[in-house]
Length: 106
View 1 (spheres, rainbow, N blue to C red):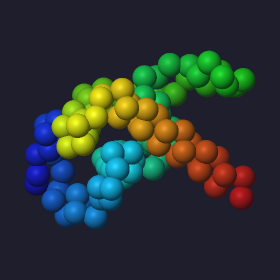
View 2: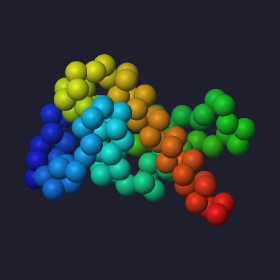
View 3: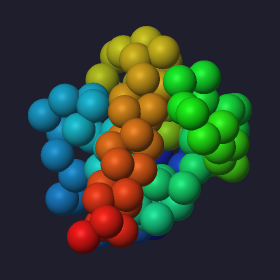
């Protein structure tokens, strides 16, 4: 087990294949390892209703403590602002939701 800078503990073998070319890619791959694709597709960052959706779906939020640990780890590893990491998390959540909807339609 490896303890990351945010206090998050993961198996070392899971961390070695993560792409470290950019904080966005690193964040996206770390989220899949920690939460899994199904959870990412069915949850949001804050658990609030989307203002741009017509169906008014309110998704459950990801565990705040774990998200905070991921944000702190990525922030310290890449020296980026927490807001940029949150934006990368939102992008990954949106992408996973879109991919899940596509798989259902096929």
